[in-house]
Length: 542
Image 1: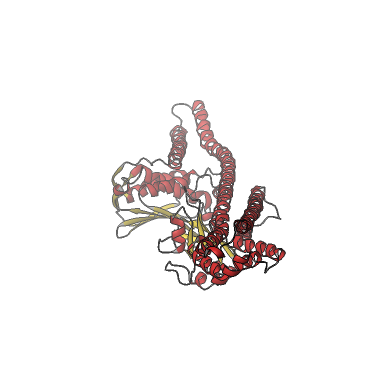
Image 2: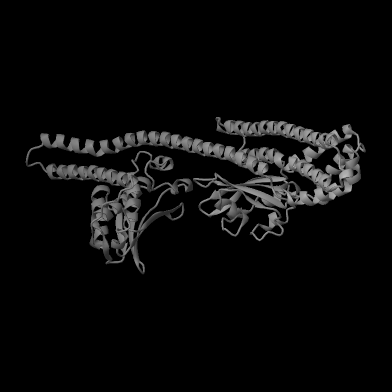
């Protein structure tokens, strides 16, 4: 092989020139590019041992594979060498050209190395595929564990996400990996898990979905987004990320299509491009993670719905029992009164009072049924039917106080503005005022005054109903206007709890609000705020 020995430098120069133009030179320094071919040329001339060359080929392949080169790019280096040897032989004087046998040995040697390279690469890809499957299996196992009933050995979601990202970082040989999930309220991507380098610096920042940011670019595109150096990139990145020591980034959208969940990215300390194989692996892992995130979300929502259905069932059963208790009282009174009427003569003095008692109790039952129908309508997303008309709120409050005095005695007083007029629904407001005052009777101190106060604001009116007695516990106030709520059910005890739920429905249907303030010193005050004119608020209701 004297030809190779005589023309070695010429062949190497030509090879380096051609190789720099090819994909095989991507991202390589001059030293890295020439780390293999000179030794091969030396072996062809007998200047290097074939055993040493074999070890060097293995090292060369491992380096190229680690950098993400495909087999065609690696084999191309040797194909270029074949062409350069052939070109050099063609240019040489006839007397210096190698014989056919020598050329055949050269080409056979180079081609055997190409075959060996392909075999090694295929074996690596097989092992690489098994490795990827192993990591996907680890993700699936982690997700399956998270879906089992919780016990003391299991941690919160953040720990599970952290473990998943650690698997992904190891699978991609990355220096850092991060998962950011989309928060629809803030329209930000919030970091949920970071592993590897700069973990503390990257964990607590929220990222923008604006298109001029790295995270926004990842979120906006189905294809992966790559940054070779975060320090010099024109894309917006956080200071924590820019100065973290991580340079190159590869990010993917989760999922690539359909409903947006978030993004995932990996980072490397070195400034470089990512190979197609690295990109494909991250996409495969991202698809696996997305599937498990979806399953976990559906699982959590299902459990929540089951818990809510069970709570709803229990509360409905309690509600029916309590409502039956409330209805039995006025029904028993009315029935007793009718029985007494049968025994009395037409001229008995008690007869008019018994008739009034029957009417009052039937009115109570009728009001309870109306409250139940109206509040159930509101819970079903329907509109509370209002008949808006010109109302005198002071006259309405006086009517309610008079009706309550007839039932509970002279405990009720109306104070404040002597005249307050507005556009409201008379019947619904009357029931709401009755319910607020009746609540004071049930839960306030016995025989203490219950005051209905009327106040006028600039564009609204306030109705305040006050009673003395034990304060409402703080934990019950948030739910006191809820129908079927657990705390509301505990608060009302033997009461159905319809009254205050209707009060809120009435206030909101008028475009107003209702609140409660309660403490041991001043007692309990329910405050309903109504706009002067409820008509504009009706057009926005379905």
